[in-house]
Amino acid sequence: MSREPGLSVRLKLTLSYAGFLMVAGAVLLAIVWVFLLRYVPNGPITGPGPFVPNRGDLIRAFAPAAVWALLFLLAFGLLGGWFLAGRMLAPLSRITDATRLAADGSLSHRIDLEGSDDEFRELADSFDAMLAQLEAHVAEQRRFAANASHELRTPLAITRTLLDVARGDPDRDVDELIRRLSIVNTRAIGLTEALLVLSRADQRSFTREDVDLSLVAEEAAEALLPLAEARGITLRTHGDVTPASGSPALLLQLASNLVHNGIVHNLAEGGTVDIVTSVRSGAAEIAVENTGETLSPHLVSTLVEPFQRGSERIRTDDHAGVGLGLAIVRSIAVAHGGTLTIVARAGGGLRVTVRLPLRQT
Image (tube, rainbow, N blue to C red):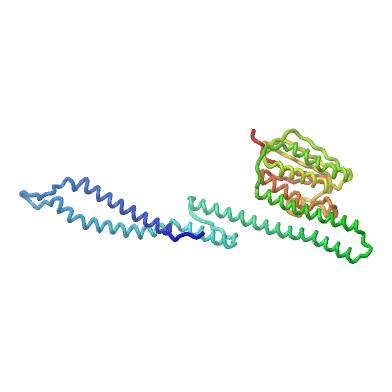
């Protein structure tokens, strides 16, 4: 936005300092006039003895000196004000330079303002903290975009390969081709929808409502019950009323992702998935614990990263997901002011716990 040029803050402060000195000098002269000169007679003072000046004589002698004093105060106020304003606004100049560097894309620069804890130091520290968050956010977005573009390219490449093979095979099975294309297309749609949910959670663009996590867990378990039965997995829900506050749709997505993750990564014969909701230590908690393979601590620490999967053996499954399940869970939990904890079970499998702020009644 273009604006008309105006006076700089330094010049405004300089004029303010000089004006204050001029006013202070004028007030001082007025005090001298009121309390001293008004008691001196205005007419000629005659009588024996030495010459005694009257009011007019004092004014004629005092006025030039007063004018020179005011001019000196004006010059001193302008020079001193300019110097003092420059010293006071020096930190603001550094903040401005850092802002311009950030606008040009350099987010690694920091102000690191030294000195005592004052308003400028607080502003600089807040700006440095903002730059650190922006740098981390941009780095995460770039990494996520690179991973997303790679993952989206994979189903397209598979589709093209299937079509090329079918085109060169005169005895191709059309029904099998359609089935495979449908699986690939479903995975691509699922990835796109997951990306949209993740973006929505990161932006926190939702309206908070009263939510009972126990009902959300039951709804998610009921929706995924056919998938669990097809895999021979037993779903069990436990818990009392667990009041929370947030987006019902996003919290249902959170619970569904947790249950889905427990099902598709549950490679144990006759495995189980337990969904428990409870109120603990002043927080609403939903925990999903599943049997499965024994996972290393290093692998567990990477599961919340986008496109990370707990086992490579599930990649060929049409219900395996796109590697965004726990990343979405973490984003939704953080957007609701909660936390996500993942712990490997000693006998194999995972226990994933989400803690959300308890709804205030």
